[in-house]
Length: 164
Image (cartoon, rainbow, N blue to C red):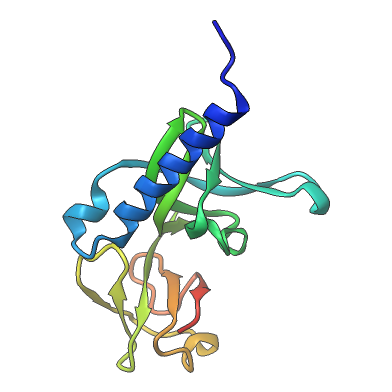
């Protein structure tokens, strides 16, 4: 077949980014779930100068692009669900993402409230945490993720996704 010209690739990427932005700006859950979704582990490839953050899913590396990917390097090793527009089977323009697990332990992703709970990022409601890790206690209003093994009251792992 014919190879796609650079101009056509740029136009396709531009269109995909516009669609991803439109999907991301929807405030309702139904609007945010339209589009493509992929679940996998955030992985960093390459050395510092040429470092690339990808999603490892079903044995494939999927390139992630778009404004929603800033800060994903901090989530290396966590399992996330990304939503956006799949440009090719191995390239997705990300409109949003949610942390789902860390080292196989289910995780919650949300905005920390003053009562030690989370307003969940996926729009499914609120979750009361068994305990808030001391490093996160002063971060009310920040988007965080926390993983607890069943029956445990202390977090196995946690992190900050974004500050207020």
